Image 1 (cartoon, rainbow, N blue to C red):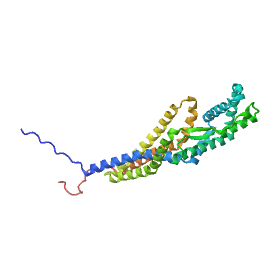
Image 2: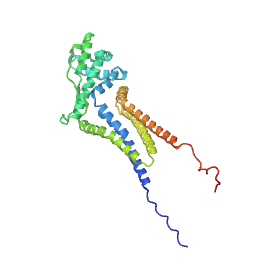
Image 3: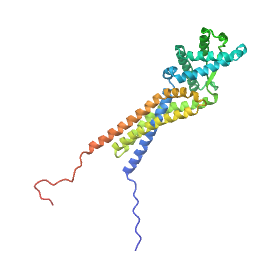
Image 4: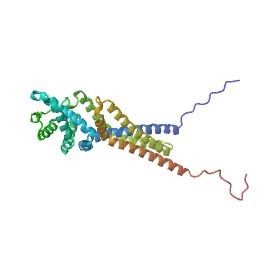
Length: 310
């Protein structure tokens, strides 16, 4: 008995090729959506000085931020006092300094200094990131205005040695020199991505829907992909918060760092939930439209009345 002949090899049909191309384009578009949202948030949200200062201003009333600032400024003032005649009374003077700094963080003057300090930090960082001719050293800010206000408060309270507190221009590094080139390159990449990724995602999604054999199904898949991207972006924000707080060397500063992280990522969290809601709405609308278009099930056609059936 001769061996059975092998079944003929099926070549992919144009419809299958179109569906595969559509799936690839839609998947790539859905991948670019959360990446574009993240890049736009970093390049346009964080890089806008007015928006950044407006976001950080309410944190002047946050207890965690106040405690962290009071500790940092108090340490700096005591370090300045740890010279000359003030050294002998350092231990007796420390509680008054700590209390003066803590009470200063509850005043309107602190809110003003907090806003001015954030503006100065943001301007310095942006200048270092945007200007290629900027110095390659660390990005620094001056603590002299805050120290001067604390000194005024201590002098008004008639604390001993308060008038001897030196108000020097203390440059504090907010970005180490070794990290500036990498941050500058990252900022350049994010700025380019924020400009190109959103329109690229829209074009890829439109092309994927256009070449699909079943376009309604492609629209549904696009909506579900966008919703999945929004969910992944929201999960990334949560994971990023945990990793950021876990890397802090001092657990006491975690409440302040958490408040700052939540304030800075508020717009990103909103964008992720909007993507999730928009994607689900598009997918649901497409699916419901497909159900309506099908109509009720119909049986086989019946012969006209009065004629004998064959």
